[in-house]
Image (tube, rainbow, N blue to C red; front, side):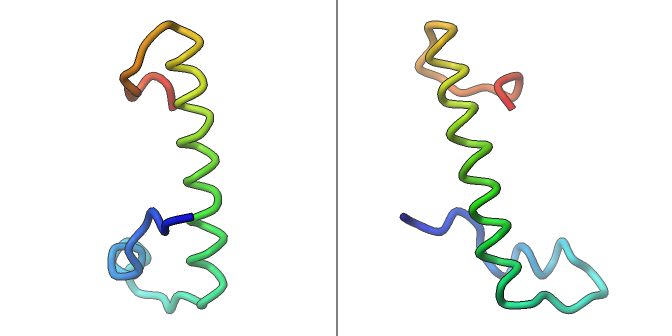
Length: 55
């Protein structure tokens, strides 16, 4: 599966601390799960557009 997050964006968001290499994969997996649940919610509500309220 494709990586969702860019490492540079994660490093920028974690301002002031180092980011371990295993953190990227764990965070990317978590974000993919959030996206999957949001898609399911949108489909359950008869929409083909994922919106902020689905998160």
